[in-house]
Length: 88
Image (cartoon, rainbow, N blue to C red; front, side, top):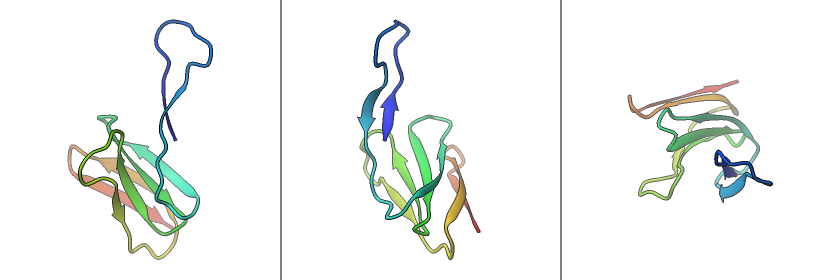
């Protein structure tokens, strides 16, 4: 789940649910936001990593499969067009 941060004014219950993301079939082990704050990458025990867009966009989510063990770390750099994953 992604939640919107509060405004500068003080208010009760400031975090509002923005969107719930699905796709992994097991626990998510790592998460990395891109510098533009519009995309993020998650790695899971289901041997996949996925790249999501904060708002609906064509071509997202992208799945990176082929890992032989659970993904324990991930890094996303959209400016350079690279994504890195680390497995056990």
